[in-house]
Length: 493
Image 1: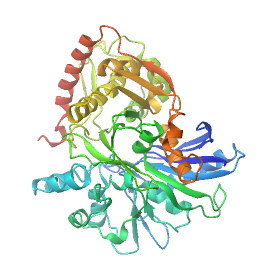
Image 2 (image 1 turned 135 degrees about the vertical axis):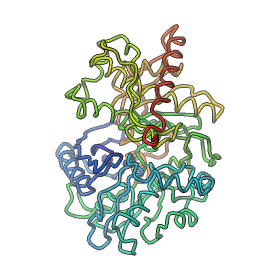
Image 3 (image 1 turned 90 degrees about the horizontal axis):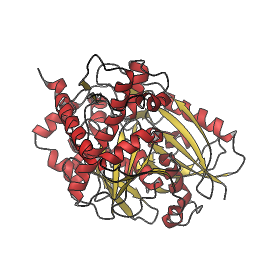
Image 4 (image 1 turned 180 degrees about the vertical axis):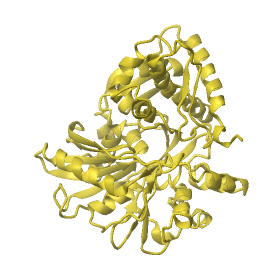
């Protein structure tokens, strides 16, 4: 059958990733791309630079493999908004990234006008600038982008698909569509009520196709051969849930990436909105079956490590964070709340801002580094606690992946905070793995999700340390105090 290639277009870089028929990685390549911050709270990407990074990684990957490619999958940073000209294929504005806060006041206005119940019941989301709709509305109203029939909108998956097919296909799939705040997640189609609320013309929206199924084929002139089927797409966090083989209701995963995202499979029935959490489409298979998930979104975890590297110069490389944090046994009472883009679940406060509290003259680089590491676990606990309370089910264990999951220190601290075992996936790039699995299922490389479940394996299990509960609760209590200092900061006069 050949191998399956996944293109993982993330927030800070692109990874092209190859998987064999046994579900094992056989090669990968990675490139970062620039981040742009035009004004405080704004975050942008150049969509052409994302595409250039994709071409570079595909070129490097294909030089490493000599087997035919059976299918290509795409996974992406989700809510980020890309607009381009259907005739020229050129972007009409920088992509507005999911972290961007420029539409916070507009979301406040919509909530004050009483639109939150419609948004919650239809999209499963909350009125927050995190999602695509208010960003797209801003581009049309203030960004100088025309809303005529020549304008195409998409999350990054649609942009990648458009380019891979030479402009032949303008489409997305339900997991990404469900993050736009324009999609009816129960009826499984674009919502007339929501597109009207945000003044979004239907002509700019992509077609929504199943997450696993053929979208199109590659065009000529790419680093891969023409005619290869592109048959799987999913938003990065839903792809990770699939790649973690969380195929049964109640199974949960956490990805420590730029942000952290806890998702729990809740089965094939769309649940009612849950306070503090999001309801989202996990995936739709080719047979039409839909899986839903509850999600808690933490905006900044791994991005805080980048901040230590690029903003403060405390480290020179991200790999230094674990060893540096391990140089001290505790933070000495220091807490870092990395609310650089506001706070997501369960707070949903776009006006929260980054805060460091508890410093003394004895505070040094190791304590700051450790506080950043611990903040990842604390934020994840905020979400898991809310999820357990909402669902009525304690998370049995937590499957984890993403760049920061290599840190034993983090995962042990996470287990202590949650009081449950944390399992690190042997293949940590589960986002790329998930989209590869979706593509391979569509093309017959694998017959069913049951075939894929046998490939999942752990390379580390972290059980709560004996007698850790009291210290964990005390630390978490102080964390909540620190969060309280950050809430509403940018909105206080």
